[in-house]
Length: 326
Image (cartoon, rainbow, N blue to C red; front, side):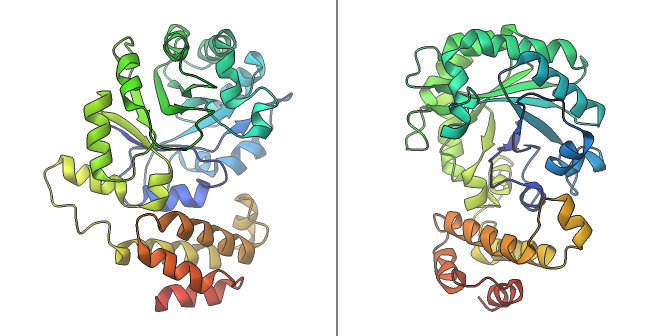
């Protein structure tokens, strides 16, 4: 089975991918989407959004990284996908699931679920132009307002030549509200010959086990659950290997990851900060740690308490000291 770190816009940037996959529980990660509108991007854009291209398209810990694209113009998306592959990307993923209104208004992400033929054309164009040995995958939701066309869309993606498909088991209309409809994934999986990866509402080991039982999917993609519990992937792997996992996802271990993150950002050379789109390290560290702690509070009460301590701080040194003292 494969555990993939989801491509969360505004959350799973380069440093976050590095820290979470560094826990050892993830087999693959996908970048935040590269939005294609009307141009073939220069190399600098790809290196900025996917710095891992400079290191063999993998994180510092060795986890493979695939680049994700969002757009509605088949030729332009395919051209940019080929450019990413020429720079070393190990795989290409296409985004048909982003629920953001600004993206959907411009016929991107989940909005394309209303146009199955456009999705087919996009996947087909990328598959034709990208080298045969490079995996081309897609990520979708069950639909925009309803799941009536979910199977048709999934079969179209397969027919267009995709090597795999991930489905977030909710419609765009449902957003992130529970539950995730894992049973719908089972109906689709039975009709596909390509691997289907389940995504949505996997916060714990028990969630994974129930998702696997209901959907029949061995492969999973974890999004918010990976930020809430950075060690969740390791927990799941330990559980599947018959090993004890209760002592993995402790607050002490989670806090150590946060502290490592803070130390990396606080000591990042200015030239590297520019490469990772971090123009104001103090602000970046404060904003990202507060974001992480809010999400982690679902799994750790201590995270909520620490958030209350640092929520008014903007100084990186002060925040790092609070983390050490917590």
